[in-house]
View (tube, rainbow, N blue to C red):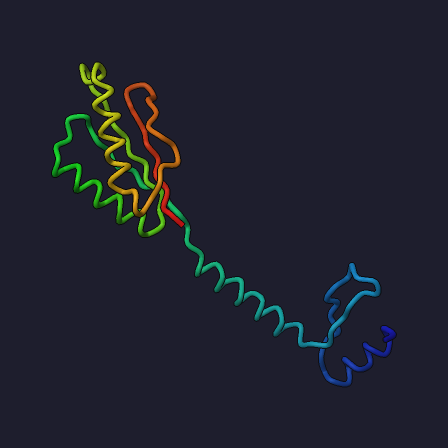
Length: 141
C-alpha cells in the first residue's frame, strides 16, 4: 500500500501510522494508538523486571576446629541459601598454628560439599589463598 493511502486511513481512524519493521523490504507499518502502545510496552518491561530473580553470593565462615553441631548449623543455612537460588561461598579461616593443618580444613570443606550435594554442586573446589581457603557452591538447576 502506498504511504499516502496508509496515512489517510490512519487519519480517518484517528490513530497513528507506526513503522514496525523498518529493515524489511518493503518496510512494514501498522495503524495503532502509539501512546497506548508505548504505555503497554513500558508496563510489560516493568513486569518482566519485577519477576526477575537476582542471584546473590552468600558467604559462610568456618574454622578448622569447628565442631560437629556448629558445622551442621552452617550446612543447614547453606541449604536454605541454595534453595533460594543463591550462590554460597564457604571461607575457611586459618589462624596461627592452624596453618600447619591445612588438610583438616580441606577435609572439612569436602564434607561440607557432600552434605549439600542434593541442592547444590561445587563450582570451584577448595583453594588456599593466603590464610583463607574458599569453596564455591552453586544451586542445581
